[in-house]
Image 1 (cartoon, one colour):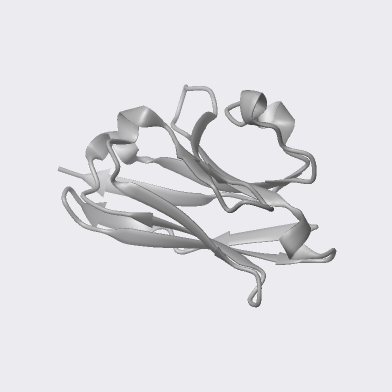
Image 2: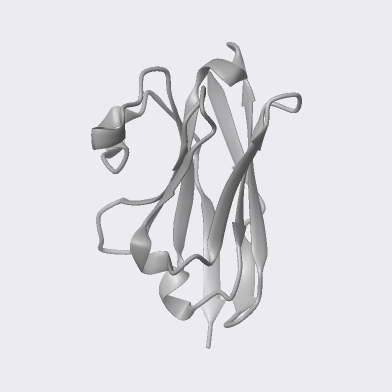
Length: 125
């Protein structure tokens, strides 16, 4: 699976941005999907995940419900809608896919088999 992320850019605090990640290759619906982010000098951190079979979603609790992950299997695309952006949301955002994701490991980057190239999101105050 090849993943291509897009939609990043610059925003002001309080704005909204939507990210997209389109997959090519193997059957998209067979993968659980997630978004991570990495700020300069920090480790890659979990943002959100969606399981392939149930569609259940999980989020990093510190986000306070501002972000929403969704997918469109017909378009082979996963989305991340980000609302009420804050300067601390500034990071490179990565989409990822796993063919065998389990709940206990969703926050670990090592649980994912495929990664997109990342898209920069910069939020100014």
